[in-house]
Amino acid sequence: MRTRSLVSAAVSAALGAALLAAPALAYADEGGTSGQDPAATATTNPAADPTSTDTPTSAPSGTPSDTPTPSDPPVGEPSDTPTPADPTPSDPPSGDPTPAPSSSAPADGTGAPVFGSVGSDPSDAGFLTVAVSSDSAVTEVSADLTELHGANPATVAVTGFTLVSGTPQDGVWRSPRMSQLPSYGSYDVTVGAQDSDGDSTSSAHATTVDVEPKPVFADRSISPAVLDVEHTHVTLSGRISLFDPITGDTSPLAGKTLSATAENGSSAVTAADGSYAIDVTPKLNGLNATSVPVSLSFWIANPDGTNTYVLVDSKTLPVVVSPSRIRLDHSSVRIKFGAKASSSGVVEYLYDGTWRPAKGVALDMGYYAKATSGAGGRFTLTDPYIPYDDSTFTVETSLDSYLADPYLKASHAQFKVDVINRTNICFCSSWIDEYSDLHIQGSMSASNGKVPPNRKLYLQQSADGRTGWKSLGWFNTKSDGTFNLDGYVSVPKGYWRLYSAGSSDYQSGYSNSVHFNRTATRITGFNAGPEPVRKGHTVTTTGTLQRLSGTKWVAFGKQRIYILFQAKGKKSWTQLGSVKADSHGHFTARFTAKQDGTWVGVYLASGSYVDAESYHDYVDVR
Image (tube, rainbow, N blue to C red):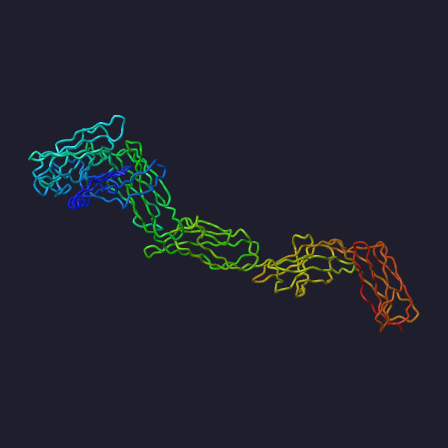
C-alpha cells in the first residue's frame, strides 16, 4: 500500500476544492496513486468545445473476462465536464485549479523549504505539481522520477517548474509536460527546492505517480429514460478517446471491445473514430422488476501486465408496467359435440391513456392451448381436446416467467361453450319373425352421458339402406333410454334404422341400420260358401296364395294352406284341415257345415317367407 505525504490542513482543503472543481484524468492502478483521488470520475460536456474530453472512473482488477465485473467498482457514475486537451507547462490553461500553497513557512523566518502536497496535476497526469513554502521566496523547484518497474529503472530529472498559484514564498509549482519520460508506468518521485536566501532541501520518495494513457469520453448516452412496453431495448452510444499524458495528444480508442450489462450482457467494438452504439434487450429478473441497472465498461491493459476495469457509463432505468386487457370476438359459442373449442380476439395495453394492440404477447387457454398475438394484437386459441359438455374457458396472458411480457400486467377473459350433445342410438338386437313383426331392442344416450329429454325415436325403412328412408312410426324409450318392443312391418324385406329429431342441446341422431330379407306373402280372394248353407251340406273354401316379388305380387304355388274355423260365440280356432295350392297358388278345400262360424285360410311360412292370413269369412248354417 503506497503512502501519501502529510500536508497542512490548508493545503488539503485547497486540493480538495480543486479536485471537486476540475475533471480528473487519473484513474487508480493496482496499488493506488498518491496525490490524486483513485475514485475520480472523468466527464465530458457534450455542449462544450469539440476538443474537450472527459475521463472515466476506473478501478484496479485482475485479468479481464468476457463480461468483466469489478470486485470493487468505482463509486458513483460518470459525469460530463470538459477537460483541456493540451495544457502547457509554462502557461497553464485559464481556470485550471491548482493546489493551494502550503502556508507552512518557518515561523522564525529561517530554515529550508518545506514541501506540502506532491503529485500529478489533477487535470493532466503529464504534469507534476508541488506545494512548497519557505522563509524566503522559492526560486527553484525540481524533481527526479525513477521507474518502479523494469530491469534497469531509469531516472529522469524534471526542471523548469513554474509558480501556478500562491506566492513564491508559499505556493504551488507545476512542471512542464514530462515528455522526456522513457515510458508509461509508475514512477517514484523525489523533489527538491531552493529559496532566495540559499536554503535548499529535498524529499526522497515524496510520492508515486502513474503516467499512463487515460480514456476520455464524449457524447455518452443511455436511452430510453424509462423501460416500458414500447421501449424494451436499451441503446448505449458515445465516443471514447485515449489521452496520452506524455505527449498531450488525444486519439480515438478504436477496436476496443466494450461490455454492456442490462440484466443480460452484450458487447460491441468501437469504430475507427472511437464511437460505439450498443443495443441491449434486458430480460427482466422476474415479473415484478421495478428497475434495471445498466452499465458499460471495458478493460485496459497496464504497462506492468495488469488490467484495469474502466466504467464508461451507467444508469438505473425505472420499469413501468402497463395494464393489459383481452377483448374476445365472442363471449359464448355453440359447437356440436366432436368439434374443438376455439376463441379469438385482441390483446391490448394501455399507454398514454390509449388502448393499443399488443403484438408478440403469449396467451394460454387452459393447460394445452397456447398462442402468441400477431399483427394488430390478434390471436386464435384452440383447445386440442374435445369438450364433453357445456363449460367455461378462460383466456389469459401467460404467467410463465419465460414467456410472459414483464411490461404488461396479467389479464384474462372468459367465454362459455355450449356443446350440442351428440345423440347415440344403439339398435342392439333385432329380427323379423314369420308374422312380419320387427323386434326392436336397444338404448339411447348422449355424449354427455345423459339421456336426452326428448326420448321419441322414429323407425325408418329403406330398400337399399342408402336412399329413400321413410318413417314407419315412432315410440318413446323408457326413462333410462332403453327400449324393447315389436312392431308389424308390411314389407319385411330391406333396411331399418332408428332416428331421433334432437333438440336445442342435442343433435339429431341415427342408429346403426339392420337388414332383413324375408318375403311377404298373402292370400287373396278367399271365400267360404255357399252362404247360407244347410247343416250337413258342404262348405267350399277357395283362394290364391301369392308372394311379393319386387313391387309385384306373383303366384306362390305348391304351398300348404291351413283352413281354420271359429264357431260363433267362441274365442278359439279349430284347424279343420289343409290343402296344397296348385302351381298358380290356387287352392280349394271342402268341409261339412255344422254350425255358424268364421272361416280363414292361413299360410305358415318356412325359410325366409312370412306367414299369410286370409280374409275372415262368416258363414250362416241353417
